[in-house]
Length: 441
Ligand SMILES: Nc1ncnc2c1ncn2[C@@H]1O[C@H](COP(=O)(O)OP(=O)(O)OP(=O)(O)O)[C@@H](O)[C@H]1O
Image (cartoon, rainbow, N blue to C red; front, side, top):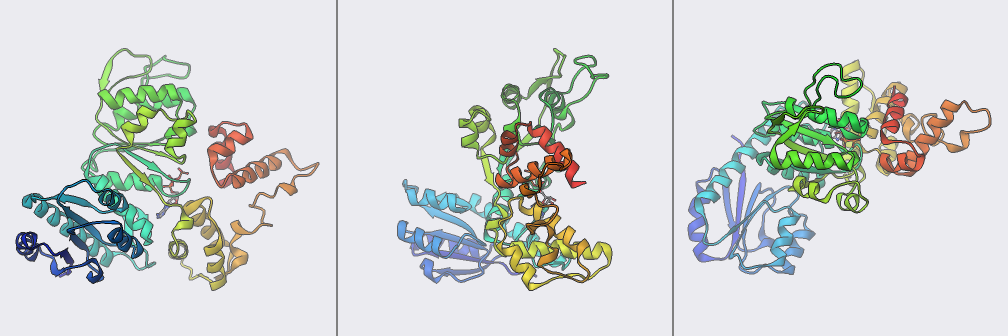
């Protein structure tokens, strides 16, 4: 049996009297200490009931990254305290106020116990291709990823709309699928739509469907995502690229659950959960006119930030090992990464995040005979043909090749931000997507 540990930190006699019997029978291994400093490592869950909570305690928690691997339940007398608010934004799970609702607390403990146990069981079943933790479809063991897993776990239990914010290639779609698969809607469809990859007319018809003859090319009636995804989850990727007038229509559906197919007057109803994603920071997208403020507030009950790969420390090399192990298993090879290649991977800034890393390893696996060294990390080499070197454009360079180099170089100078690159190049985001797709073939 897996033993999970819970620690209570409190010096309050009355509270101890109520809590100790509950915790002793909660299924966790239990210990009780008086101060934060005495907290032992490897508790899965901590219940912290400080008499006073000030900047000093907050500092201790922050300094030791105490939220990275442990779930925290805070108990206070409920008086307003800005440091407690900060604590909650740092990743504490629950805040209970005295007098305690013991039944609710017990429910929460049982939920955590079940979740932890499932996690441990999954870990022991996982194939040993790497040492990375996996949560749903996401891989990564870094503190920032663990925090993300916690947020996702909490979000999955609710039915509110969600906004995922993160650079391109950080795994927003994987996160959305994970939330869906862990939610009560898991048995129903997950429908993904990328607003940037469609023309404004098509986005509307994709979302709401259309009647035959509603526009040129509408040769038959068609269901949109809101109908197909009824009872399920609708993933709206690149929401900030959706035309603003369409965002108003979307807002109406979010408020009323009602919509009309393009070309129809018949009102239909839908029950979908929206998970929207963007690689722009929402507040600046609102300021720049790319996102309606009201839609942001509708969607951002639960804003979740996905960390860029460069902030994920050792995840970089472990993900590289994971992608390599996968290629090895598919092709029956045993190729390895050299230490110097690992060093190069750690030093690179990864503007394209995990997607870029995956492609880089896949390509290196093809190029290397046994050992992948810095030379095989093709995407990172400045003189490689895949790298866009603007000096390579000369009179006589084939137009298509010049265009490819220019597009990739612009994307590189915008740190992988496609919207910004498309703006600078004077082309639509849709065109940029299409071009990049051609280059990846
Ligand atoms: N944490 C992760 N673990 C494993 N694979 C990942 C992770 N994050 C991203 N990937 C891989 O990287 C690629 C891009 O992921 P995904 O499409 O989810 O990113 P995104 O943030 O939605 O990108 P974009 O904004 O460009 O649409 C996929 O191949 C995915 O499998």
